[in-house]
Image 1 (cartoon, one colour):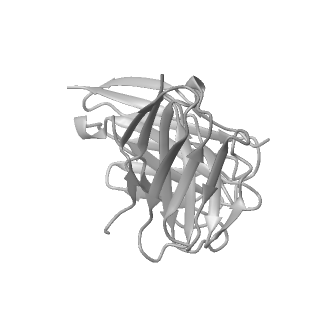
Image 2 (cartoon, chains in turn red, brown):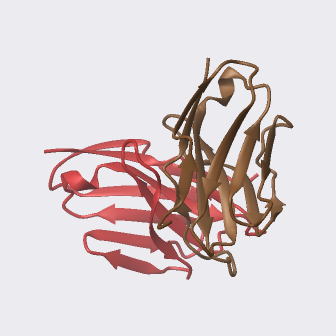
Length: 111
Length: 116
């Protein structure tokens, strides 16, 4: 079945350093979404990418969707303590009835 | 309400008991999802409703799990003969009618189930 893997599983960075998480799907995705989950919280939608090669920015966050639409990345420039949390990518199945969530990358920012 | 509401927020039960978890989605959201999340894992899909019908229940782990959404709004996830392995946070999410697989999911705070 479809699998969505993320690397790394954990990342510790000093405040001000950059951070990147990578998402890889075993199948082509029609679109991909990114969510952030703070410790003890629930996933919160960040962004959706639809087009091959698409790049979107939200302040210090840059999201990319691969040309083959099987991978995606999230890059955070100059991390802050407010960036702490687990970042998940999520992609739909062929039927579109469910979204598979990736394994997540847990980010710790050391002040 | 303004967001997705889930009750109870915490449920502790004994092995073999029956539990119900309730989800009240955002008003007007026709799509409703149930996910299960274990510590350190991503949300695991359980079931998807479009209106009153279960459009996809392929994620339900076995026949002890059942979910309903009789009026197309509130949904109840029902777990019979609970097992310790059922312990997890059960997340509900809702979304506007999904067109071509797009549309963000709005999650509730979750119901933490602990089976002793």
